[in-house]
Image 1 (cartoon, rainbow, N blue to C red):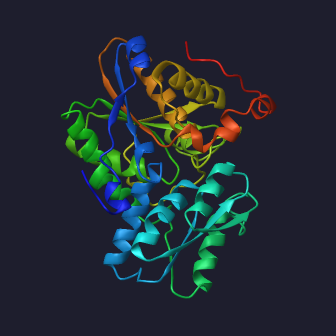
Image 2 (tube, rainbow, N blue to C red):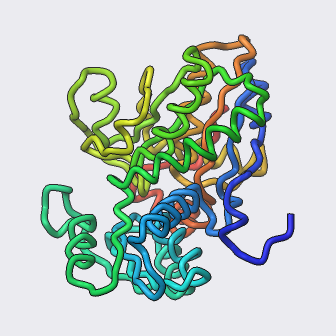
Length: 327
């Protein structure tokens, strides 16, 4: 495919069979290589879906400024697409994310506004700060990735069908963490419509409330995580579209071991959310050992987006994490 526009290259990412984990479990575990999108993450799809629907609805006009509150990847997706479509970007982020994300956003020409991390209920949370900024900025559009259902629809229209076609309809399970709920919302809805027997499992880091919600019907959390952009304490409009059968909780050590395992054994440098996803997919495979089930998850972004943390011995030691492999 030849394209002159960056956003035309979003999607149609390959499915990579995770050979070491597949052999060990007797299942086939696949990762959707979303780090190969132009902006380097699955959130490129979200950004394109939100921009496309807003343009069609007349909410986003030439010369407007796109404003969003994000842990980074959706902002990067928006900033990757915006210039070619004639928009500027203002991105509000908590100030404890990886330095690489801030550097990428600035290189893409976005204005980055950093705020102290705080609970969602606090009016200074990055979400509320972005909303207020959009309300006071003339000729602006608030992307609102958490509640804007264009987010899950783009995954229903693209990610889900791609997975189904790539495996010729032979999908037994889909595993995904939740940041906004867009990916699991759209993909689970599509796959369940194709085959209600497809098992949908939510992967949740410590500190998030969705594991408790799926298991016990109430949002509650314990612990914390170094992962960025996943795990929430509320039901977003995008997550409400999800059809989830079960949930699995993943510790930071599980995540880190998976990241280092994939790097050494499979030649894949994936980020923290992908580590959460793959570990949960592997655990589901081990629960169904030697069954030959086909299990799909999302490789959300690259480890290079977090190298100042993931490859930082002092940081890992401070967090009590060790660089071991899964087996």
